[in-house]
Image (cartoon, rainbow, N blue to C red; front, top):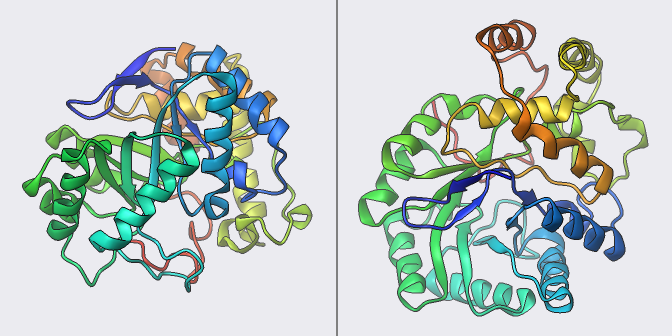
Length: 328
């Protein structure tokens, strides 16, 4: 597995890393044995960086990672997130020093560590200037609790404001072949400032794979249940378009997930995608993405099949998108 730098002064981590939200049941039921097996395979294939959050299962994802590291005597680089009010109403965030300190200490306890490589603000608390939040995060870094800090789902202008106070290690926003919003300034700003860009849901929440999920079979707890792109008539329209991309990938001898991830990696060396899974077979499918190298003709064909903005429906419902910074 090739490595990429996590921020200017951070460690070299695996270019493809593992998102652990599904460990907490966000995409259906989750068994500890499956999560541990997934982490075993990730470790064996050279994945060194995990992404989790206090919010995922109210700490369950962090607890599983902590137990795994303790029992297996193996440590990953870990990013986790705080700043949302656990148990509060949707969109309720608290980025005050008191709340963030409590959240970080809780995360470290569940992870069974005394240091977290990267700590994100999961969602901004708009009652506070982002500069004030950076001062708090800088304190945590000075105290030796975190190696670096970042923000999730923010705008380029907010990144510039934060970065003017202290170096931001990473920004984590949704980015994939069907969610190209970060191309409207965020990718460019991260590159300019030396900030890593960490795409979450780089496989379109399972759509950019060899098998489409049947929305009617999703559990009520599955977050896709309310996402407009998975509702009819949008879902059928999206399947038809993505089927052509699947055929393109197969014609080159690649699987669809690996091709979609290779496209992410091809957008710049400062991108570190974090596809999420608890399924070993899915993990093995996309790990070969680092072996795919595109020609100019490949890139042109992908852009023809999946032009910018092709997806039918929004990436979140109005209820789900609360707290996310919009721009452009």
